[in-house]
Amino acid sequence: MAVWLQAVLTLAPTVQCQQLAEWLEQRGRRDLALGGGRLWGLWDGRPGLGFGSDEAILMSVWPDDASAGAAVETIKAMPQVLAVSGTPLHPTLRPQHDGPVSGAGAWVFRDFHLAVSDLEAFLTRSAAAWDEFEATFDSEVVGLFRCPNLDAGTASLLLITRYADLDAWERSRSAEAAPKAWQQLGERHALTRWTRARSASRQLVSGEP
Image (cartoon, rainbow, N blue to C red; front, side, top):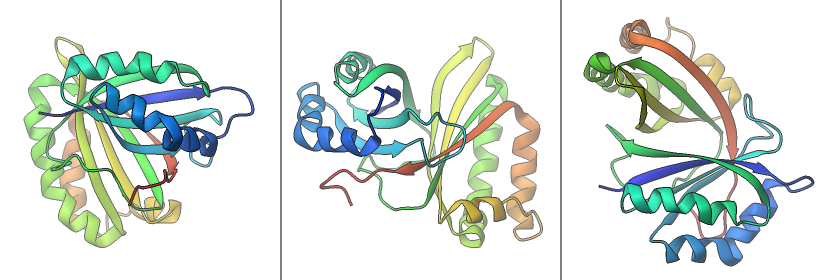
């Protein structure tokens, strides 16, 4: 099964995400491919909420955990990058394929911590909510990934959702507009020990949809 790598990058002073995209077009894709990886998506933290103005999010797909781990060193070698925080991710319900992401809007990266024993219930309630949620709030649940466990009893997850814009994300907080979805999400929230949501803007790299 493919492994995704989420790399939160601290960019060098004066470097913008567009310059990183240009480097990926010219050389970065080739460097990733040499290690067996493929670009999944690039996001600029500056226009969003919760990421630093000097941060970008680079996500790539790898054949296994070992190659994903080795890729952190490849990414650190990028001349535009000062530091890298890399997290290997394993897909759960979504995505159902490993092709590159597409679409504009507000991309929200939400982290969850919960008891390992509650993981299946969390996934079940997520799946039950998504159809109504997406239809009501002009959104797309792109991926729900397992991250490395915090400890033996605590699971960590990353949910990536694309909204039409930040206003659509704000409107999605209305339980009255999608009561069945929000019943499931409320039950999911009751299982959650800690959560954090941050948004970013997708940076198009030449050749992506």
